[in-house]
Image 1 (cartoon, one colour):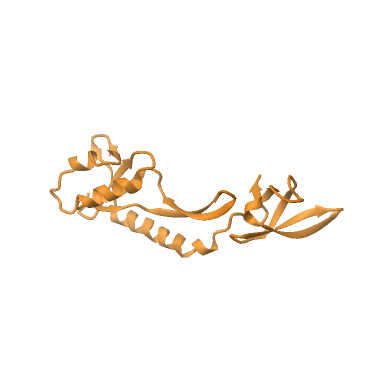
Image 2 (cartoon, rainbow, N blue to C red; image 1 turned 90 degrees about the horizontal axis):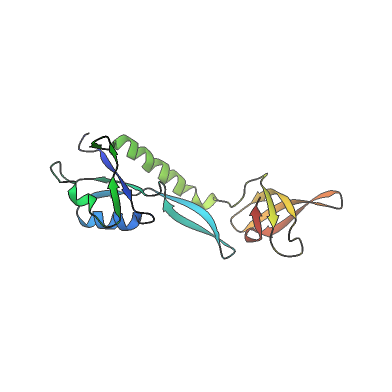
Length: 166
């Protein structure tokens, strides 16, 4: 372990942000990698930022002699991850690689699409309700589907929220 390494901390379920805030208030350097994904809520696709590693975050004491005991009892923290009797440490290099990946994913979040070309979907509403089709292309709001109509393949455009992956 070096002074630049990070402790691996397991949080209580869905309490990553709370643990991060309480650790930061104690003067501990905290890193919670986040991930952007599309989720359909109430028939609307939304970008949701959530932890990249569910229930895990990284923390680094601000000085070498800082006690780890307060971390264990911090609100939202379940426990320190251990290998045997020693706390698990993530190297600065590993954390920097995760940061780079997070930044790359954030740069590409405008390109997030609910479906990929070739996905099989079912139409949930409208005159084509219940029909399955293949995705030709999609954006966050619209999807173009290939439907077999009267023996011919037709491209029809739908709102993304009226389609669901099979």
